[in-house]
Structure formats: structure tokens, C-alpha cells
Amino acid sequence: MVRTLLVRGLLMGLLAGLVAGGFAFVFGEPRVDDAIALEEAATGTAAHDHTAGEAAHDHGEGAAVSRPAQKAALFLATGLYGLAVGGVFALVFAGLRGRVGPRSDGRLALAAAGTAFGAVILVPFVKYPANPPAVGDPETINSRTLLYVVMILVGLAATAIAVATARRVTTGDDWARWVAAVAAFLVPVAAAWWLLPAVDEVPDGFPATLLWQFRLASLGTQLVFWTAFGVLFGWASDRVARRAAAPAPLAVPG
Image (tube, rainbow, N blue to C red; front, side, top):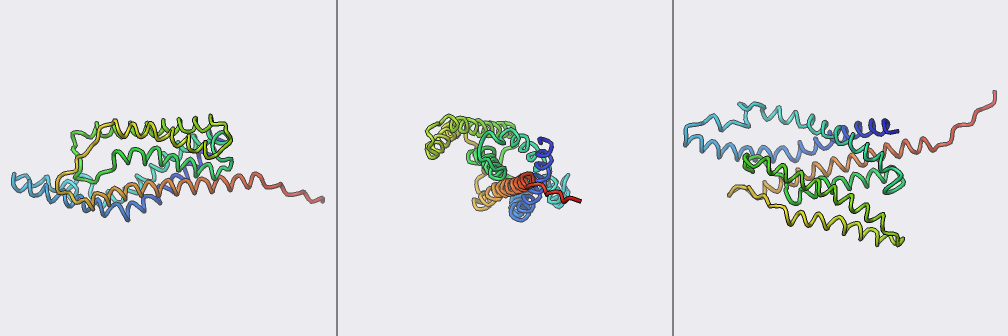
């Protein structure tokens, strides 16, 4: 059973990754191009002032990886991301199945995918949203990555606390269970949002519209991925369950 779920997760994750790659290509890549153009214009001006013109083409034709190659590799990256997430999701789904959440495999898949999006994507994004090229100090990338990982761990821990809290509520009232679970989730998340240091490295003069368009495209790519993955994995799971529950055909006497 676990092997079947793992294969299903890998396949559906790959498909969802390609769908998300299409979204990122249409809505995200133009924003990246705009940000790179701003960065190269600023770098080009500085290079002209300091007679170091070669630094102005880091993202252009003279880059180690050209922009056309980067765009082509986008689908490879999102596909590999989908494979990795799909495999992990399938293993977690196997542990949750029949123990937590809806009894229907399809509904459980949707609920688990939505929860994963909230815990792993939305929680860290609210505190540390994605930034386009030309935004961020290269010297702080390690600390920024560490803070982002901490927020992911907080989201996962808050989800586990919320699930455990919901299971402990024995009043039989669904509303009470949901309120308790949401409160148990929000308390550690809000505390982390408040206590962890803020990161604001947006340079003066960077277009606010471009910044938020990039961030919305980044978040939208993840939303498209998790929605597509939850729907595909749930659809495949329900289809398998219906086949397993279908009565076997009666043998016709010869």
C-alpha cells in the first residue's frame, strides 16, 4: 500500500509541478526579467563610473547560465520539486490515512495539501516574503535562509499542536474542536511572527508594484502547485478506492 501511495505521490507531484511551472513561466518570469533589467541598469551605471563594465551582464547573454536557459530549466526545477514533495506527502498521507482527518481519501488529500500549504508556504511567507533579483544583501543570505527554515519548522510544529488539540476536545461539538485547533495553531505562529527579527533589505527606489507583483506570483505558483497536487492526488485516491469497493463480477456458469 505504501509503495502504491509513493508512486502516486511522485506521479501527481510531477504533474502538479509542471502545472505550477507553467503558471510561474507566465506570471513570474516577466517580473524576474523586469527586476533583472533594473539590477543591470543600476550595475551598469556603477560599472561605467568605476570602469568595470563586465559586472553589468551577470544575468544577460554573458552570464554563466543565460536567461533563456534559466527559463527552460524552470520546468525541470518545478518538476523535481513536485517529485520531492509528492514523495514526502505520500509517506505522510500513509501515516494519516484512517487516523486523522476525513475518512475519504480524496478529502483527506485535499485537507492535507491545504494544511501543508498553510504551514510550509503561507506561514513563512507572511514573515519573510519572496524577493526578486536585486533585492537582498548577498552577505545575509545564510541568516535569511535560517530564519525562513525556522518559520517552516514553526508552521509544522503549530500544525502538529493543532491536530493534537483537536483530538483532545471530546465535547462532540465540531465548532469547539475547530476553534481549539485554530487557536492552538495561531498562538505559536503569531509568537514567532512577533519574536523573530524582521528582514527588510528592499533598496530605496525599487518599484513597490514590481515587488508585490513578484511576491504574488511567487505565492501564486505555490498555491497552484498545492491545489493541483491535492486535487490530482485526491482524485486518483478516490478512483482507486471506488475500484477496490466495486463488487466483483459474478461468474457465469459454463
